[in-house]
Length: 320
Image 1 (cartoon, rainbow, N blue to C red):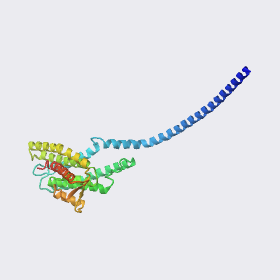
Image 2 (image 1 turned 135 degrees about the vertical axis):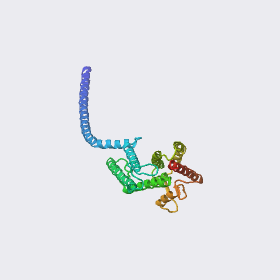
Image 3 (image 1 turned 45 degrees about the vertical axis):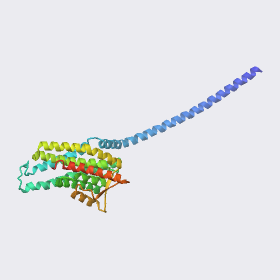
Image 4 (image 1 turned 90 degrees about the vertical axis):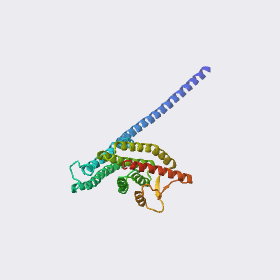
């Protein structure tokens, strides 16, 4: 009896093992099928993704190129446009003779050709501006294709471009005839479009710097001031920017001064006109920001006065 029971147990155990083996085989086959299906699916996805990445690779490279160009310290293309304009204007100016220097092409002072140089400057600047406009507009079209910063478009919108162009023209006109207020005008134009105050101030400071370089170049050629005077005023200008500009930007960032707004229902262009006539007068302009107390208002006025000193001093640096 014992032998029979042992044999029955063995048979049952073998049967159970065989069943388990079959079940495991089935499970393994199912697992293999699932793995194979997933591998096939992944392979298809890889092929599709490779097609998509090949299609998007050009766009990604172009997007990366735009990003890298915008974050370079020295943007070669924009610097070439700026320096090209500077040298072209200086060359045309040197073609005209005046009481300080003779024409490089031999024109006499009291001739029609000498006076026509003024019209040549206007024509060349308009042509140069159109070249820059078309180039930068095409660049913005390529940025639209890859959706690179779609909210930052200037050249595609003609009204906005002409608005900034008018600001630059008024700044140059005011600085050229009055010797001041160029930086204030540029800042007002930029801040009216809700551009960050520090970026607007930096742009205005760069514009003032280029105007000062232009004047410095003329003074060196005409020798109308001494080298000592030039060095002294340049040193004072550098110290003024270091001491005043940085604290002003810190305060502007702290109190979130974003843009100017005109009081007494004056239009924006009336404010610009008043800025041109009264360069350092701020009685018609009010800062639109979070003013909750008189102490804050006093701080805003101090910041505004510091910035006015900065821009007026930079613009007058070489116009004394």
